[in-house]
Length: 422
Ligand SMILES: [Zn+2]
Image 1 (cartoon, rainbow, N blue to C red):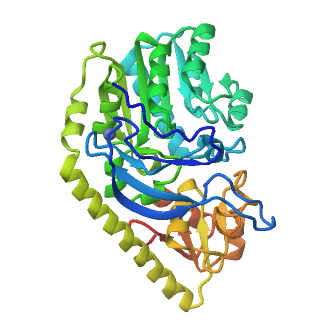
Image 2 (image 1 turned 90 degrees about the vertical axis):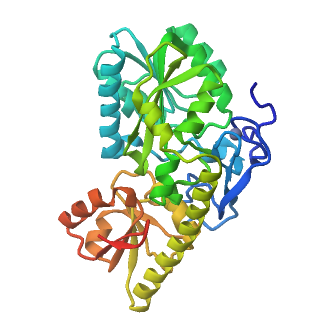
Image 3 (image 1 turned 90 degrees about the horizontal axis):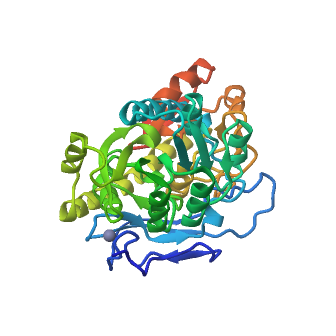
């Protein structure tokens, strides 16, 4: 039995509160964290444009006591969250490129793919994931609603520029046949009508086909205090428990799962129709380590307190720097930086600018909800501000030596989980 009373924001041009669990329909949900109101992270205003009104959306986390899913309290219309000019590209991050190459090797070894097999990637972005399958001779098809899909197409990855829906799944099946592998990397938590998506996946998937998803991992998110990965793109924050439950509702069985390092801690989960693949030990051992029910609620309560303290600690560090007259900038403007900047309350008087590597579509725009400009990274080395806050702190240890090698001499500060000089 699938829930019927689930919030739908698509087509409203606005937002809809989540009043029952998006997966199991249970109500009421328990509020476990509030980050206040946030601007949409992907509608960045060009530098110099006159300030005009922008929507701000409440950003609360809710817990379902029935299926243990942690979810956002508000669904925002995808046209607001994923505008055609969506600026995110996965190919620019080495960690993601490496991860997708590794996903290909693992899947190829595990699934014994043949060259004729069709591989479909939902939310295929710039085609980075599929390029690995294509290089090995498989038929590939990307499905990507934003203009980033055009980049993939220009790189030779056939890409359908549409949202993935059951209708799109049926079209793909008619035109290309069934898929042996369907992947959804860092987008399975984003799509609001999750049951329709899983039904579409089932329709398109070959009888022995495999669905591979990668999602932020709730348990790692809490452990490493990555509250900055909470924003309106991410409707759901999966544990393996809640994800396996969702898939099970559609007759899919998780047969392999493991932690991967992307986005500061994610899980890669393999599922197939029940009984089709032997279930590996990885599944039981990951499930056994996860909190549930009252234990999960207690863990979330601790998380809430730690998030609050981390804000006060960062402000205290920045206050000391500012009182000493320091000039402060930011390094990199991933979506998560928007949550941190707005939750902590950083503005252009505190942070002069944020650096992005040359070529980033965010250069020349303001950080969401602020008048902090995003500039090309070269500015950091000519300007030498006293302190640089590393907003992509989840890869800070990889970034710091590179920035030093390029000549930055100031203080490098990782803002989370506690302010730390690199
Ligand atoms: Zn639920």
